[in-house]
Image 1 (tube, rainbow, N blue to C red):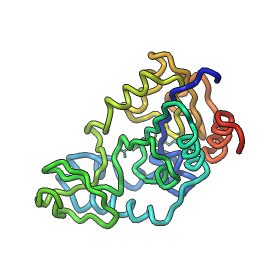
Image 2 (cartoon, rainbow, N blue to C red):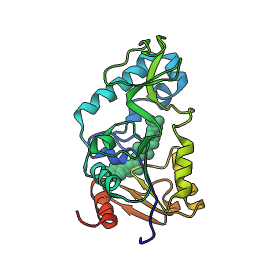
Image 3 (cartoon, rainbow, N blue to C red):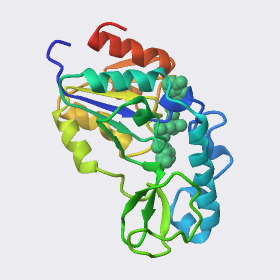
Length: 234
Ligand code: OAD
């Protein structure tokens, strides 16, 4: 651990599960009531905007009822105290990392508390319901949509992520099933560039065999323990 400097940490729905946000693919997972094609594709948005907007309105409203858990707080502590480079790449569209205090963070799949203008491309902080045909504050078009990266769309900030992976000494994956690319491939990219790799998940993920070390258990226990190992103290 002595020559560790640059960290890239990928998080998924599992890190927010203990805050009360359902994961996507587990029992009771979000997709169970909805086929993914009905709520998370550009075609769905074009076909039934009211359904898609309502689905994300409910999820945005649910953020008022949840709080960051010990895993989010531990990563925020690491972010604040780690002297080397660090980047938290979250697939999550909730805002629990930043509410815990993390700043070296990017949301590769978008954010619930953001609206995207399909006409001019501006991203606007949005905390209320977002009815279809809401007016863009920038260009005036009735084109605001949830700022969520749908299946078939390019995740945000891929170049920055690739650059961080190329420089990483350690790549850590927390609470993700490894079912969705490109995030599922980050472990291979990191290894290609020589990083050590660690997975923390409740159970083995689809990509577990790619990781040099896997720790199984709830994120609220595993992540604070790991951060304690890196930084010392509690
Ligand atoms: P998944 O629901 O696919 O996987 C969540 C993972 O977290 C599973 O492997 C669980 O075993 C694990 N898990 C559950 N509870 C946990 C806990 N308390 N501690 C640690 N691990 C736990 O969620 P993601 O991998 O994040 O995309 O899904 C990836 C993407 O699929 C999402 O970002 C979303 C969806 O399509 C978009 O919304 C664009």
